[in-house]
Image: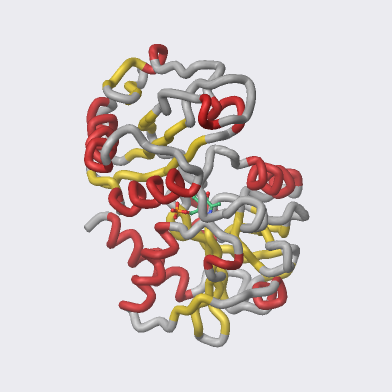
Amino acid sequence: MARIVFMNDRLVPEDEARVSVFDHGLLYGDGVFEGMRSYSGRVFRLDAHIDRLWESAQAICLKIPLTKEAVAQAVNETLAANGLTDGYVRLLVTRGAGTLGLDPNRTKNPQVIVIADTISLYPREHYEKGLRIVTAATQRTQAAALSPRIKSLNYLNNIMAKLEGLQAGCVEALMLNHKGEVAECTGDNIFVVRKGLLLTPPPDAGILEGITRGAVMDLARSAGIDCREATLTRHDLYTAEECFLTGTAAEVIPVVEIDGRSIGTGRPGPVTAKLLAAFHALVRQ
Ligand code: PMP
């Protein structure tokens, strides 16, 4: 069945949803995006995703030609038009069509696009048994080069690391920053349990501040789990009691092996299980 896509001001069938070959989103990855998920007809933390989109756009001097309210409405309408109550939404804003040069001031008509689809989940087995991951040699882009806090259409840094993970037979890969500290995975944030504390790298480690990450930190605190942002090395991960990843698509997923080291008991741990259950309860509230 053909999907219905929101383009700028209206819903159109997917084969009419087209962008110019001169769009700088295509030519240069010049644009920003969000990935969201709806549960039982409600988008989880829609406002937080829209705020993050606006922050990303602000950081690249891209003026989104709609209001936040109109974009939120477009997200809900696109889900409804596709008959999706539990789905995945990709919201993007491109710089618009311009010249073949880089100059963003010579572009016009930023494109606001909303695509809704069914969610493709990691196999159930990954949640039950946990993931194996490896460290990618590709470092996370330095904030001084391009802030990882901007969710831009240029994901090559992450894709390079993802390729390394896939080549090693892993669906995710760990990325370190230029100082060799743990940053995040290619599309997920990372947490460890060490000596009873729940730890995750701070924003200045060079991460995207995940909305799932924020929700899990809040859930942990409500459950009386001491959760802190901390600079982490691979040694901290290798010697952790538990490890898990968070992200919109993955939700909360256990990691049981990193670079061939078995983490904790080698099976998903109790803190991970508790937070996964709490997260499921939260999104279905
Ligand atoms: N880090 C990166 C690099 C990501 O692309 C994402 C989202 N796909 C995340 C972390 C997780 O963020 P969120 O919980 O907001 O989906």
